[in-house]
Amino acid sequence: MSTAAPAPAEAKNRNETVIVFALSLAAMVVSMMQTLPVPILGLIRTDLGTSTANVSWVTTATLLSAAVFTPLLGRFGDQHGKKPTLVAVLGVMVVGSVIAAVATSLPLLILGRVLQGAATAIFPLALSVLREEVRPQKLPGAMALVSGTLAFGSGLALVATGLLTSGSDADYRNAFWMATGFATLALLAVAFLVPATRHKTGGRTDFLGALTLGITLLLLLLPISQGHEWGWTSGRTLGSFAGAAVMTAVWVFTELKVSEPLVDMRMFVHRPVLMANLAGVLVGFGMFANFLGVSYLVQMPQKLTGYGFDASILRASVQFLLPGAIVSLLASPIGGQLVRHRGPRVALGLAAGLGAVGFGWLALDHGHSFSVIGAGLIVGAAVSFGYAAMPAVIMASVPHHQSGIANGINSISRSTGSAIGSAIVTTILASKTIEHLPAGVPALPAESGFTLTFWIGAVAFALVAVISWIGLRGAHGPRTVESGSPAEAPAKVAEPEPAQTV
Image 1 (cartoon, rainbow, N blue to C red):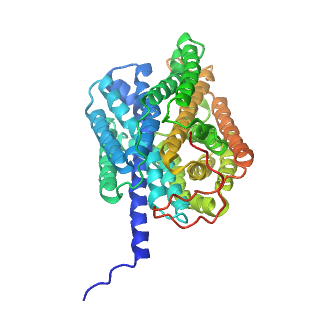
Image 2: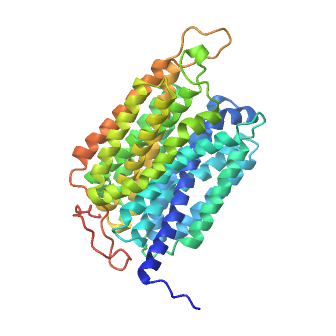
């Protein structure tokens, strides 16, 4: 007996679900690349026979690569097709993962990490695809789910790396082979499950704008990520910051003069977009402050320091970090419903409140495993709600043809916040050390360093509350897209006027 064909609405729902799954997988893999090497930097340093300063480039290279390529590829996808750009970028990530897995020297490993970093552009491209393919009433939830995989993927990478390198004869390359497998799976999912792009703006690519923006971000992020090694008052650090200030002026001047700018300056300074980017810096900072602060804290030897849990990398990942990562994924649909029914301002405000409470709890009590895990659950939900709100603000505030570049800049803001978080945590823990330790024992951070780190995290989320309350007044959910897209039904919420193009 023949089976009846699915009704159009059922088929549509099924197609949307498949698309969201494929893009969520791709976004998760991207976020995994950023935190994957954090637990194994010591293994890499020993295996390749290099210094701590040199091995830090394994993480810095990915950050700088993402800063350069994300806005350029986001804009390129808007102009020439999002799916082809997505597939190409995922292909680059697969190649980079293989190179990192087979590398026998630090330069080759760094090359692989540069190629992995370029894949950060997947996230803004994925959001642009969702805007085309998902109906308005489903769009907040879809964007929240894809965004929620970012925090989950970052935590999952730490846990998986801990599992793969827990033995006495651990090989860090297993982590990169795992990354290769995930990247290949994401590539196949996007290639076969995501439909071809319908909206293309065409036009010329602003390579001069991309070059000046890339140099600006390099000069900004390089001293942030390397300042601890260089010295915060060294000539290289201060010179890089000064160069970033000069190049910012050059970039703005360039974008105001070209006929088809990479970044529309009016869009860039449009209040909701600007506030979303500031929130991105703060939430990204909070996420990394939680990951690094908790990871270092629980591994402290209690007999020597008087605090800590003597946890191995594996235990730190599975017992203390994995629960928060899982909660961040589970909270993402709730964040989508908040954005849909109450607006991104409420979702971001709730993220701020939860984040401040979670970090405050950690600051006041980090001597019991229940407190560390419980606070991590709260911070994980806070990050998820924050990541759900920011793309909704962006989509509600920019025209369709600028969604890729706008979300690309927001992605960079989160990466910048993560870099700042890593730098501040590292600097604080290195500057506050225990004075009296047995001979031969390396310097260990004092407990006050962790307390200060967690209070700074609470302040960061308190500033997010200010942004949601004042900076996003009047912001609503995602705006509808142009006629001809599948999301033609009018949105149920009022929309702010989008920024005008130049």
